[in-house]
Length: 160
Image (cartoon, rainbow, N blue to C red; front, side, top):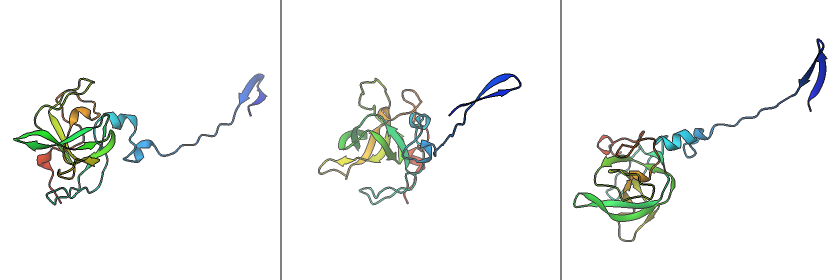
């Protein structure tokens, strides 16, 4: 409760305030702060895999995809065959690669960069949902046709 006192002829209002803090949301890689969520990928998602070829990766990063969508595999050099569906939210990605144009999104963002991951739901008869996710559905502060900050290029990533 505030306390009133007279100090040198001046009425002083004194209050006691207790401030408690907890660790920032960004301390947990699955719960980035607002800046991290819109500025690219972050943290260490640990080892992921194996993919259908038997490879695992230890360099996965967390990224926030603001929109869910299909994960694709390549056919005739372009990512055009859906292999599964990735839900919106915080997901892990291994790397990024430049290829064909991403499918359009209502927000109008455009890109030709794809992020390697595994879908939340694999479509029957596919490669367990492993494939490329369109970058125009991932939060970042970069513009159209720009890479996602914090995520390595696929040619830089080696399987374990």
